[in-house]
Image (tube, rainbow, N blue to C red; front, side):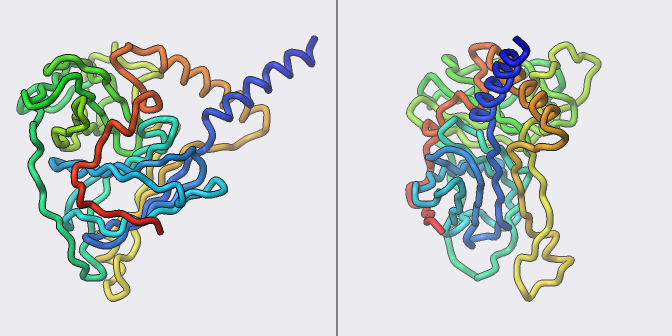
Length: 313
């Protein structure tokens, strides 16, 4: 009887491991008009890379199948068409859903190294959206409203990104006005963007830090955070051989997205994994209007600029 329980226990662990396996991503130093290399281990093809510069249009870049082999991948965006000084996030997705590889911490585009020329001009989206309360920051456990411009075709998809943390997708939204609750801890940074049913985007908000409040009724272990199963860590890296170490450290970033971490004895690891699986099931039972990043459809996020070029490394 005891052996039967052990078999069931480790069978459950094995199933969980097949779903929650590690998907780690390393992002090179971003510099204007220069190649940007993204490398990763794990995940399931096809892959996509999403760049979300604040107050601009996002760039959704499909990764060719040839960039991934034997559980490892490497892909180089031929030119990063963002101006130096532009803050942005990079989100990696695979076949299991949008944001499954995680989101980096805040990155800033550095000065060009190779003096390449590319189009870094920003374009205006065909429609926009407003995030309210107007003139105020988002507040823990208080309501917020996203009002989408009339040019959007319903239903729309509203995506919330946390630098170094989880992505949450509100989908489908069958109204141009959407209200929800800021169910994240104070001091968490949030960023939003909107895509309509035809894959047309409405631009990106700025990254905004959530204010604290005495109300914590909306918070639970299911609440999105920047310290959940995947994390991002930014460290400095030189942008050119001629620059000094002090100046290069302030103008470049290297981001590491970790999909999972192990440690401890085999039994302890198994218990932790089981707990994570149970937590994933609880998260999946959230409101039907709120879909976790692993349940949305990354290919609904269309690349805005058809002239944007990316090539495998």
